[in-house]
Image (tube, rainbow, N blue to C red; front, side, top):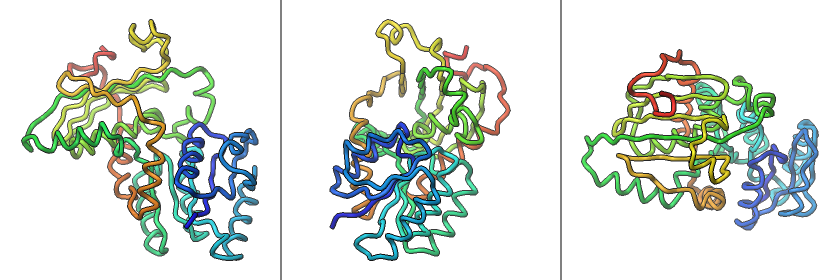
Length: 314
């Protein structure tokens, strides 16, 4: 049976992937909210979506639907709002009797997960998070390959992610650590989750460089030593990216071998939604390790460049 969805953050960058997933899984978007009214994207997926620029009116409308009938009630709330609002919007979903489907990061701080866990236990609804790299076919195949290797093997891993952004980034909520969690949380958390999913728990973590536009360091996982570097500075793009006029450079190497997973990203949200609707999906505890790591990176004192630093920082 078709389910009713509501969505927060309708004008944001990631919202179209959720709209596409809701549509492709045969469900309906009945309400959306965003303080910005540039949301013509809604018409490309659904007709007659009730749209609000004030959360209070959106809240009232969803509550009214809940009281009318089970058929009209919102069954899922897709959360695409700025990071610092995810916690509150997940609470809203449970309060109106809906499951939450939350974009990364689920929350900014580890203790927020504890509070949501209590609320989830008090309800018969769940809070799901989007960890789409865990369903990427190439990453799934890589995990199976790694699990077949000796349990004590340590791999040498290098993560590089440079996604050039203009001055607007630091002016927006994304450039405010108290709202976005900083670069490690906002643009790095999917990769940290993926690396821990592949190589196990964190044993050691040092931050070498941390500014508003660059952050990098060294993490030792159960089965990997990881040099990592994240940046929004165009000047950090390697020559091969500049020559091809590519604004983004993403690379992960394992023991010197490049892992190719650039393709297929646009369909991953639909797979995540299919899993959630089938009663599976990733929940609070799945999200916890990467949130703990990102939070520790945010609070760490950089020690400067060392022999373990990513080459881009040397």
